[in-house]
Length: 330
Image (cartoon, rainbow, N blue to C red; front, side):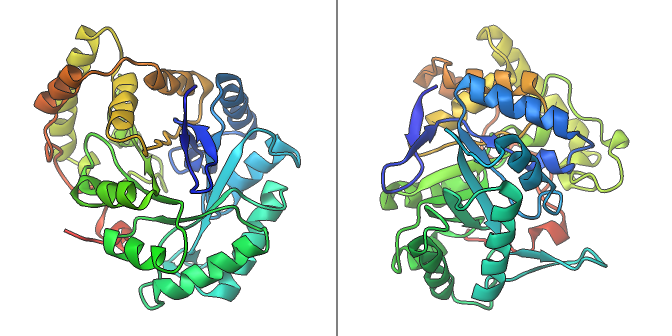
């Protein structure tokens, strides 16, 4: 597995990471044993970058990773997040970037992970009422204490990134990015390259739309994240599936799969990109990792663009409520 830089101090990780949101059940039920099998496969495949968050299953994802690590991260580089707060009774979401809350959240994450520090700590969402400069000061204090190795932000704007970098080094920015979610092309990927910040695309496989067998929205269980999402509701869903069939045909012509091609495309968008596909199964993970070895060419990139041009997807990627906290910039 080839590597790329995740922190400005030169720390390297596998160029394909593993998003561990699904360990918390957001895409359907799973088990600790299944998740551990996936983590073991990651280790065997040379995939050493794990991404989680305190709200993934309300601590379940971190706990599952912690029981697998058993107090020793070994070769794994661990990233986690905080900043989203949910009312335990109503489930209503809000945001908190204040130092006391973040400290408590970090300590709780470390406890669940069974570690004394994490390699990368993200603000999962920005609290718009708190200047990002103050948030940076809090994170820099955690770094000075040795609690975190690097600083990241999720779903912020290029302008916010520049404000944060003026205070101290930001190592990574995480945003949704894939062949059907291209907003980061309008400034964030460029800003990260300019500022020597890693860009970490989550959901690089379009939340399952690029799977050979597409998800069936009629089978989504209560609480499933994609329920009601515009791209997975009709008529948008059927239109999107029809378009993806053209992409499947291109992948077959190239002697590969759509999953491999999606990951390879993402890697080819810039040397500072480190996609983190999420999966609950070892078999799916192995296919994702094959994207690292696919021989991408300019011709193939042009063929992909011809089949799936910018803006081809029908519907928004989030519901109205899910958009809250994501910074716009275009």
